[in-house]
Structure formats: C-alpha cells, structure tokens
Length: 222
Image (cartoon, rainbow, N blue to C red; front, side, top):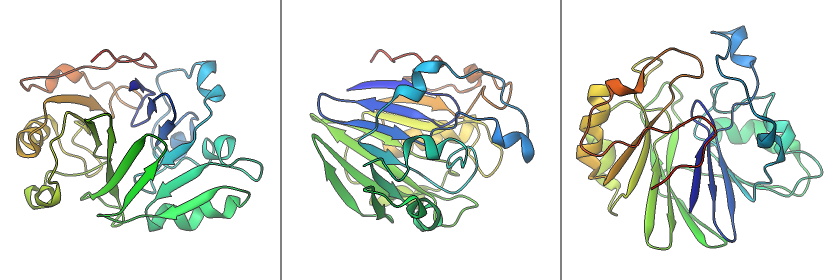
C-alpha cells in the first residue's frame, strides 16, 4: 500500500488494483467561511484517477464542492462511499458512478481492499471514519472527531496505522486527546493530519510513542 498525504484531511491510498481518494480539498473554497489555504496544490493531484472515493462528512474542507466535480461527474465511473449528509449531494452528479450511502458497521469490498465504516463524534451528526484493510494491514482514517472512548468499542480489529486530527478546533480532538485516542484504539503507529493547510499548527505538539509526521504531497514511508 502506498499512502500520500494530500493536505488537510486528504489521503491517497494506492495498491496494485485500487486507487482510493479520501476527503480531497484542492481549492480555496474554505476562504469564504474561514481562512485561505496556506499550501499550494501541485499539478499531479488533478491527474489522480480514483476507483474509490471516501468522504467522512459534509464540511467544505472534506467534501469540497469545487474539488469534487473534477473527479466525480457525468462521465466518470467512481464508487463513492459517503454518509447521508454527503450522499444527498454527491449523487446528483449522476453518470456511471456508484453512490453508496454508508453508516457505522457497513463493509464494502473493492478490488484488493476492504473498507469498514466506523463512527465519529463531530458537528455533522452523520460523520464517519473508515478502516481500510489490505494484505493484512489496517489503515484507520478517523475523519474529524472528538475523543469518545465508547465510540471505539465497536472496533474489534487491530489497527496498524491511524490517521487522525490533532488541531483541537471545529469539534476535533486536540493533541493530548489524540494521544489518548491512539492508546484506546491500540494503534501501532499514529499519523497526525488536519494541520498546516488552513492553520499554522506545528505537528510536534502531538506526542505519542510511535508518531509518523507526514509531508505535504509526499508518499509516506512505513
């Protein structure tokens, strides 16, 4: 599995058979409601050809109405997993796309990966996270969420890598609670995201036993 952080909460997972794009935010649309982006977007992101797209919730830096139409449109054929709040919007693209409405507990197999939808605690009541399984490894993308131990009780598989917010704003856990979250879920490695694109947060505030700090638009080394 090749994994690349695409800024904010965006992630790209690539296997021999499947390309997965999660929560891409490549515009500056959040400036209308918050702040301008601080990091430029490289040209290569527009060439990504996803087989599977995952959206965690309906906030502009996760489901971006200026980014999404580039990948999902009347002529594309993408399988799109999203909670109700996003599904109601994204399915209007029509075409040959497959729009799958998910909620916690839903399992979706695609190519050589299996995706399990898990819960999240956020201001979008339909917010979810995803666990991606490939060749015996698990990659848990929490989406935006607060730390809620009871939320994790339904996760009954080991987690190798967890990708999680640490910014402590907008109903996200802060760095201290993110570390507790990692302990609670039993992750082997933690990858902090949701920093640096719209803020000046230094990821070094996140202290845990096995932290992998990603670099913007660079493939990660595990």
